[in-house]
Image 1 (tube, rainbow, N blue to C red):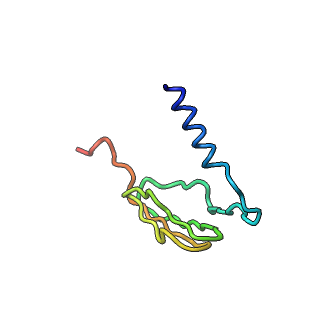
Image 2 (tube, rainbow, N blue to C red; image 1 turned 60 degrees about the vertical axis):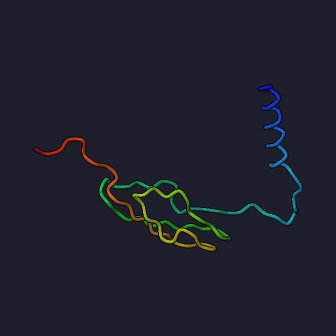
Image 3 (tube, rainbow, N blue to C red; image 1 turned 90 degrees about the horizontal axis):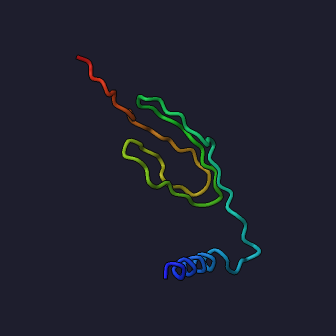
Length: 93
């Protein structure tokens, strides 16, 4: 039964990823100006440019981060503000 389920899942996956294609469609070119962000341990701000030919949305943003804007249509600079991301383990006496 377990093998049947695995085969069914594989066939379902293949059916959703392989299908009719329109020759006029091109892959979406999506780029971000920085592939890595180095954040200070204290609060700060980072600016990133999102380059996209169409609409995009940023999701799953942690509570210690604010992103403006979170969605746009086309290329746009975004501002990422972050609060202190760690607390010292040892408290001063």
